[in-house]
Length: 288
Length: 288
Image (cartoon, rainbow over all chains, first blue to last red; front, side, top):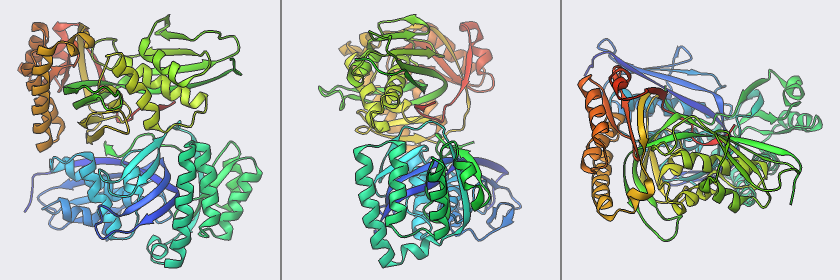
């Protein structure tokens, strides 16, 4: 089935998790995680097109034709016709920035608009959450990216099912450095690792709710980084370098990557790789 | 009690309600409204300051010292010291743009930051909601302004208690014209009027949820304007002028004011007063 040429575009911020505890459920709408993470302005822009000449669905990631299973799940669920999806990522892929969730969520918003599906924001985002959980690429990015800001995930689940709140935060500068990816799927499927992660994540959330501030988020993320045993030596050294210079830093969950805040943060990260600086995104996912 | 000189600043978008049904409850956190409305980029910026020389709380609205009972409620609840509050409104006051809610919500966010109160976004916004409900100046603006975008209020109540969803919408241009204020307090206390309003509002919400799109929001707001009998002849004529020019328009609840969407909307409104054009704010309340 073809359709007249149309298109739509959506923006989704990146999302870096500071700490989390996973909640497995058979129903992907109930599965997810609790924890806290920060949406960043460097995000993903996704355009969808339908036109008579598109005979099979094509998904492009930064210009390259890609399997993109998470976004493909969304297309299969929402589009009854072949579409062309183009996602441009401003953030690294596979390093804990919620890139797969951002692509899938942007795809869902753009398809909802282009095909006039009449879904609410939560209904749209729930499809992207399901795509992430099913592909084991993420458990909590989508509900946070759908909202924007510094998001606390209080109860797990898809947007509209899970419960969140925000911690007020100005559009502060955040610097980060990335050494490489970590496989979310691999971490999530290691029972021993996940026992430590979940204990540390639940404890951090409980502490954060006693005093939900940005500074406390950073402090508790740092503690989670140690207690969860997920950080590489490189990441620990980068965090310590930022702290020695008077800033605050923590590991990006899940990537071999470190984010930092403070006037001296970018400089202190300099010897650990290429430093990028962006700001907190107070805007969540929406149409462009 | 004095404090060292400090300050903080917050932005809150304006919010125009298209349709609503009021829910009265003795507990202001449970009271509120259901319905749907649009957050606009022309909003309110509130700065709070504390300094040793401030001996009594002062609230300035657009530069003029003001009683500002809604913001004052927030100060009394959150600050244990005299503060100076300065709210600059980019939107009209008393004409359905949620100006009192924006001032109170911005005040709450800024105080939470300046005094390091450690409240979440919902906890902060709940104080502003309570201030609005107690002063009978609004029933649903704060929860929408706290979120941004086109907000559906599904269940009444304060942020964190009420249930909302969004309808995805790009940052579209919205034009409006204002003839004058309507007293929210007077409308809300007229039982006969409120019976018609609540019946029309519940019906519009039910219809919207069958197909939650921006176009349907405009159409159902238009129908609510007629069925609620709240519109002046001037407002009806302005709406009809926009429609005759191929646009969509409705009354702003609660003001003698009309908002409109469409390429010809601003021009069609031209003979009804000074036309302002802004865009949908996808960003909700937050610190600057």
